[in-house]
Image (cartoon, rainbow, N blue to C red; front, side):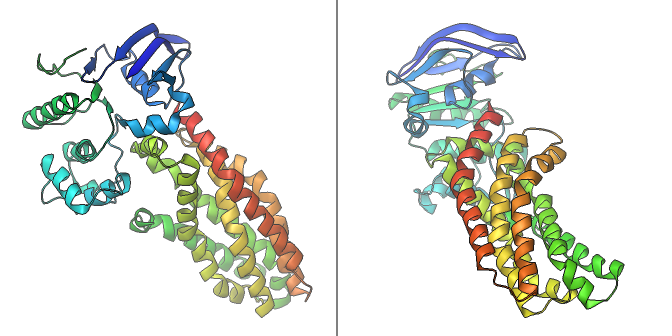
Length: 405
């Protein structure tokens, strides 16, 4: 089934293991042993295709996994060190996302198998660490994957739960599957046969950019004075600088929570192509951060003394420009999501990409205030949106894979 051929892995110029070779066949349960820092988790990430080895090759059905990524991800289930479940969602909602083809009855049965009856619709954040781990492990009862790759699956699980899991591993192996796992617990001798809801529930992600946008729009008239002509003259720059900074304020969280709770690894391993997942994430992000700015545009126009044409131009440019900012910003987020303090670097990466949007959107609003046609500016903004929506998902997916390696 799975061949590991002369695999070498290094971290910070230190070799974790060299020339590692072994095979995993149907019916095998393989326990990876070793002290802390020996490279057990690194090995599992290599097997899952989340990282690339320094040397060597991993083959599934006699073909390198990197050449058949989609088929390998469908044949394999990886559960990492973090549970990979979202705290604001319920166990039922988390499992629906990962297994959309399963019925609610199947999901309830899986949760019952891991002793979570009665907690199916409780937000995961309210569950204990052991219960959160069991939500992730419930996927074992729903997955059709032949190979399970599990990083410390027994952590925070009580003795009864460990016994139930070992029985599940044995049944999976008896049915022609294979299990590869790391654990600090000694397994029984017969077991080791061979070695858009999330964003709305996190209300600050929606409210903070709105408050920031409103504060900036409000402070400028108070600081400059109530002269309508002067406000209308500088309104394009004020509106779009405020929109850009408000977008940056929420942008950092686009993948940060997914990275911290382990969900990002699961998103990468889904059968759905990663660029498609990125599009879904960016669109959801824009719906809860960009659309509210458009809804607030009449109030912003009133505060900035814009007439109807000025407001219409503001709304149209926000409609075309803010999703472009989200798509462009996703690339920067993908590159910086693994950094502890990546906010400043993210701004430095995104701001140069946002300058063309800022220029043409402001120019469209200024032209509208002078009674000039703005269709040309809107066409350019539309082309930018089309280009970013086409190319950004692939660039972001590549950046995320680099970050996870």
